Length: 345
Length: 269
Image (cartoon, rainbow over all chains, first blue to last red; front, side):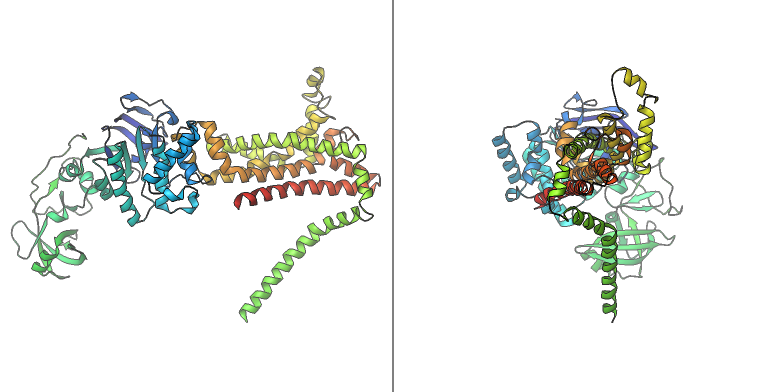
């Protein structure tokens, strides 16, 4: 069941949560809505579910316009950041809730619930109450509850946002595997670009109520449409009008006409990857991503002067936000300048 | 040294609190229980099983049976309106609901009298249609409802605020309609707030004297509730009846509180 949103707008008082948003989610895909808080990603997801009514635009599920369909008729599975567990019900009753509403036969409900509890690895916990579960278990219960009614689409609103790092990582791997088995069209909202790239096949980057760009993780990383996407998807340094990825920042010990002088401020060893932080003559702080052998070859120390050469830089002309790094233009040759690419899938 | 003095001050505080409660709340209750059963069970029992006494008991229970369910339904609905559907009129509703707390019951009785009396705004019209409000059961029910309206609302609003809307939204995504969501999710989540409001309402309706005394006319065996019965017996120096009915009132109110606690404990276990 593919999902299409056309020209969606939503305003809360003075705040424009969605501003003419259109997205296309192919049937069976796993798509991430990625953006900072306040970018409208959750509002968009809630509008698809029917938990929010749009001021303008429409939502199509499987080519059917569901804009005026109430939430309980849309057959979407929705998973909330804070689980929304029914506190007065056991795990079994939680998962079986949608089936009971649909007046399923008792034995069929029991079979289906146990099947789902196996799937989410909560087999032995059917009689527990949500307060007796860990955060990760509660979220898996919520997922089983959403899947129990065999929804056309599965919508997850920052599903791992309230969990600690280790559990998050496990759950997102598990979600990806689950999606491969079930193939239900899934959209999930996250502000974590690593999470989005890890789990999703397609990313929709949102900012200030608009879609900035959508595409595969590779596509967004290699060909960002604008500086927002470039800096939100992956790490970036800004030197004047140019944007350089830290791994595209070459560090050398001898100056030439394309290098800039910088002082090593800090060297952070993150295992194989080394993060070297520099301050340039005009005060701009940038960092370069080196490997351990590279660092050993250069023999960099904190306080030392070295030279930086951007191997690849991008600049986006026109819609550039005001710079707070001063106006010095370093000798950087922007070799790609493909700005304003339309947001297409 | 320090811990000894803090122990002393803690015990001092406890003694003060208990002493205050004993003197102001417990001592009068003990006195009335003592007085009631001073000469055994028979005198108070005879007094309240008299026709007038039994009628007063029945009438008091009838007030509870009508006013409390109505207050509960209205109270839960009103709390939902206040918490879940924000609009400008809520401030007005919120203020109006507190009126019964702010106004003396006697004044409430008088205002009902002015509205439904033979020379009142609505009284003549209703009388033409054969509807009698004052000095009969309908007027007493109105007074009972008036004085006890705020309890369920006040106890339910904070619980509703605390549970939030996510569980209800989750239920709706699972296919539950508004009524199913209310019955299966909202109501079970707020039930102890509602129950506490019901207990307070019940106690208030049972004990109501001022407003009911004005609108009822207090006719023995007809429009006399237990508190009115107590007052009349006391005025006529029929002390066993006055004490017996008083104890009965106290026992009725306490048993609703007890019933709620027992139910709650059973569920928590």
